[in-house]
Structures are given as structure tokens and as C-alpha cells.
Amino acid sequence: MSKKVLIVGGGIIGICSAYYLSKDGHDVTIIDRYGMDSGASYINAGYLSPGHIIPLASPGVIKQGLKWMFDSSSPFYVQPRINMDFFKWLFAFNKSCSINNVNNSIAPIIDISLLSQNLLKDIKIENKMGFHYDQKGLLMLCKHEKSLEKENEVVRLAVANGLDAKMLNKQEIKKIEPNINVDSIGAAYFGCDHHTTPGELIEALKKFIKQKGVKCFANTEIKDYNIANNKIDSISVSNQILKFDEYILSAGTWTSQICKKLGIDILLQAGKGYSVNSKSDTGISCPAILVEAKCAVTPMNGFTRFSGTMEISSVNNRIRKNRVDAICNSVESFYPSIKVSSSERENARFGFRPISADGVPYIGRTNKLDNVIIATGHGMMGWSMSTGTGKIISEIISNKKTSIDINRFNPNRKF
Image 1: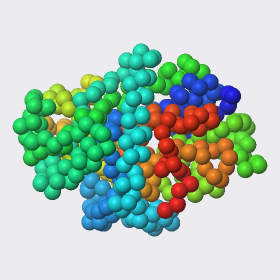
Image 2: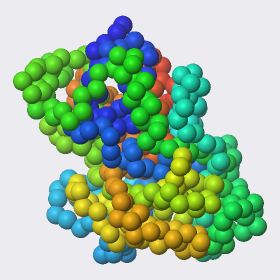
Image 3: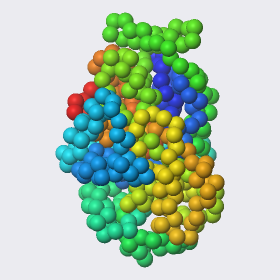
Image 4: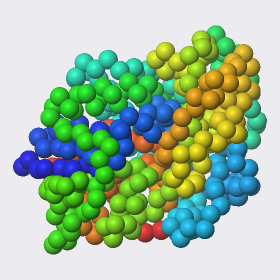
């Protein structure tokens, strides 16, 4: 049965949800408060990474975060502030930084990441889309033995869960990166990981869904949500009242504000990240994460992107130059032949990743309102989990069996 579906939020999660809902025969509308042309969906590292199996909430994260709290240039920075929503999230996040959380999250994270990767390959082939998609794997480059030991443990877990991963020495890194010197004592290599150029992909998907009849309204603010009989009955937009059968909340960081209006409790914080693009011929051919710096390096279509940092802070448009410099300086440290120019640094962009209280996304129906589905909280893995999330959302609305078990993603879970 075809339904009228509203998607609130036009980032990659909303776009992918629209793709599959439209494919399943639903009448789909997307409304976004901004222009649908910026933010984390455009400036991310472009990774499709089943190898990223450890959730953000893991042992040692809070301890390290406290050490870095007063260093605003650190890779993981928590901005101290007096805010009750922040305190609730921080308490739950701290509680989730456990080995139990890691063990309970690995399999679901792998499942949705592999599903997403396979679905995106299908989208490209089925629709003859020309966006950049590469399968070169991912290097986790380390400068110190302690980091290498931790990566070795992740590789062991990845292999135990059926993923293509291995450890490399300096000579083996050189075989993967023959055109540039890499200052690293060793690396983990995840052959299972792929990468894309985000702007190309999301623009191709937007164009495609519009051709299929999906209606997109950018720079549009929903003034009110009108509730009746335990459902959203309608929304108020400008001078119009619009009615839909189902409502998907996929507005990233802003989903928590919407949920608050609707009386839905969800623990979510904004994690600001930055990216810098270089059109210089860097010589880099394989994506890499610079482990100690928590910085990502991605060869994209026509440029190389340097991205990273996790800044848990209030939502603001401030670009911290010291954080941008920290990313660029770490790139220059790992790749001594690269010099990131001042103009490239000045053109840095930022986006907000929605961070859940346990590092695992919220995907599914809320128990507060019968026709509301939440799809947010993916953190740094939003791009990697996007098509899988979109497919699952459409399966829920179409009353189909979901492609994977989604119990771990239950948005009603307690912390």
C-alpha cells in the first residue's frame, strides 16, 4: 500500500531513505531547514567502512577526552558547558564506554555497513550513475607502537567477524603507496573498505530521486507539528497545513530539537568535524586514517580531502583555526612531502555529526507516536551506513522484514 511520507532532513540519510521509499512506490516529500547542499553529508571523508567496527563509546574514550578537554586543538574535544541535555548525554555516554557496549555493537555495525556498501554498488550499476566509487581499502597509519598494538587488536576482531583486514610493516605500506613517502612505523589495512567523493554521490542521488517524483523543499522551516490520536496529524509550513501518513526524522543533529517538541526523549549531541580540500597532486592513492591524530586522508575525484576531529559542542558556525591547523599539520607530519597551503586551510569547511549516547545509531519507530520513525545518531559513520539505513526505513514503512536485525538500533533504548 502506497503511503504519503515526509522526510524531515535532506542529508545523506534522508536522501537514501527517499530513494528506497520511492522505489517501493511511496509518495515522498523531503523538507530541510537549510539548502540541502552543505554540512556533514558534503564534507565527510567519503568512507564506506565495514572495518570501523568499534563504536565511539568505548573503553578509555572519556579518560582521553578529559585529558584533552582544555585543549581545543585536540582530536577529540568536549566543550565544557552548563546544559542539562549535554549532561544527560555525557552521563549516558560515559556509562556506555564499556567493553560490553563494544561487544554488543560490533556485529550490528558490521551488518549495516556491509549492507550499505553492497546497496551502493547496486545503485551505481542498476541506474548507471557515474559518481566516483573506489575499492582501494583503508590504511590505519601509526607512528607509535602503542597505537599499532591497538590496531592489531581491531584487526583480530575484524578478521574473527569475517572481514578482510591485516597488519602491514613499512615495506608493505610502500607497496600500497609507491608514489609518496609515509612516515609511519606500520599500519592496519582494511581491504574491505571502499570510498567515494561525497558531493558527486549525493548530487547524483538527489537528481535521480527528483526524476522519480520525490518532492524536495530546501530552506523550509516546519513551524509546528500537530498531534492527534497519538500520531502526527499534520505539519504547519508557512501558511500551509500538510498531512502525511508517516514522518521520518532524519535531520541529523537537529533531530533532538524536533523530538523535544514532540515529547520524544533522545540523547544526541553535535559532533563538529572539519575538512580541507587540496587540488595539488599529493601522490596519495589509498585512503588513510592517521591514527594518533584521528585525521582522515581521502583521494577523491580531482582532489585530496583531509578531514577529522570530533568537537562535542553547542551548534555554532565557528571554525576553530587551531583545529583546522591540527588536521593539516598532522597530514604534513605523516606525509612529509605535502604542504597544505594557507589558502587551502582558510577554505576549510565544517559539518555536524549527530552523536548518540552509545555510538550506535537510532533507527526505527518511536514508542511515543505511532507514525514517527527516527533515523539519526550515526556519528562519524553516517556516510558508511546511509544506504542501509534508507533501505531499512523503507522496509519498516512498507511493512517488510528488514534486511538485517535492527534491535540494537532501537531508538527507545535506555542508557
